[in-house]
Image 1 (cartoon, helix red, strand yellow):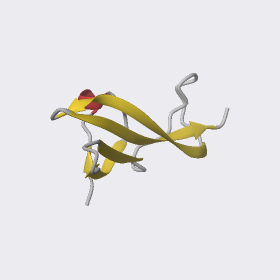
Image 2: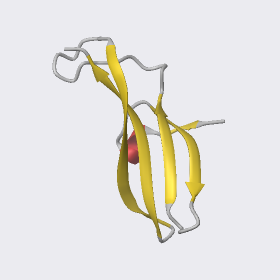
Image 3: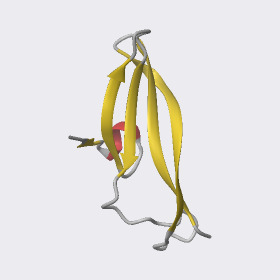
Image 4: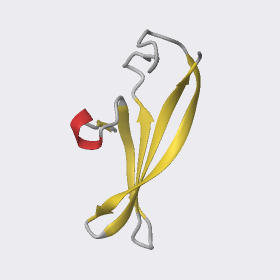
Length: 80
């Protein structure tokens, strides 16, 4: 089961949280996938476009409950 992230919380559009894990070291990892229900918009032309490939990025976020936090997101790379 997954949950969607409201846009105003992380500032990331179209992401769905798949898992939240806490490692033995205390590090919290939040794994997100792209929400396929949203249209892909080219950031330059602002028009609908197709996806070239999906890429994953890991972002170090602010500590959560005093533990280091990593957010892994899936982004759509568009054709230009």
